[in-house]
Image (cartoon, rainbow, N blue to C red):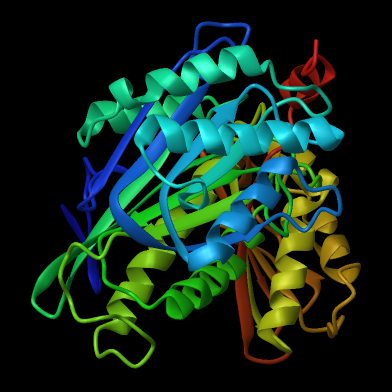
Length: 410
């Protein structure tokens, strides 16, 4: 295990590492390939639940169902997820299908309907083939396990154009008890704040107050998932659900708990790790791009500027071409709609200074080329105009992004 300040990162941890959780997945025929396309996370006890959703006006049917379930009692026992079909913009039939998925999952696991969350991802505007979904859900209980195999099958079930699974687990000491927080996510394209095209799930065995969990989830989302962009599009299906089993046996966590800082730090690390993994796995991407803005007039201004720079098609294209074109960076800073002193901006590519006090500094082009050809490109923008700071993540814009999305539906 690697130690990170107030918590430890578990190298082999997964969504099922916290006490009380099982997961599984299978192929039911929603995808054209034989890859898993249906999965579930199940808790052995009612889990305190919290969630955040896409800001897109057109919200997919599963979001309505999940909102209703969590609003019922603030608890969940299971979440069922399908990939290959978003069940979005599908009208009354799509809504009925989402409710049927909830009811079928409740029946399969012997639970009440309101204890089930539903999530979907994939092609927009096509009805779910419910005969395949029904058969798949009936087979989910047999696929569950509390070990790594169940977690692996679930992670594979939620992927669409993703190339790799995304998961992380941390642990910490709360009231002398080991508490774990784990996460799994999918996301590769249609990624842009607020909430990207992504599904993410966080499990923990902490005892925690529902209001505090919801507040923590919202705050962590603002600093992580809402700070990534791949292509400037926001999906209809984005959803982040957190479930807390309470089986660690600690005293109930809330913002006044003496170990709240450790729990919040671990929770944010889980969200940030998943968010960065989504950005790194952007459709066709070859590099993760990290933009850090410091000394802005406020944190809010810094966030807006960082997201504008990391989302700029010209900046993304320059990173793909390993072109140290700082002019594209400063142009993005200037169009972010935030207060900036045009005479005080410093820019670095990694450790390579290219701009000081808004004036170009001679630099080694070959050194810059080598740096920009690396796996991760970090852009530092110091505005020298306040104390606000923020970091955003994205990826380069490649030929493959166009190829993948030109044929996504067909």
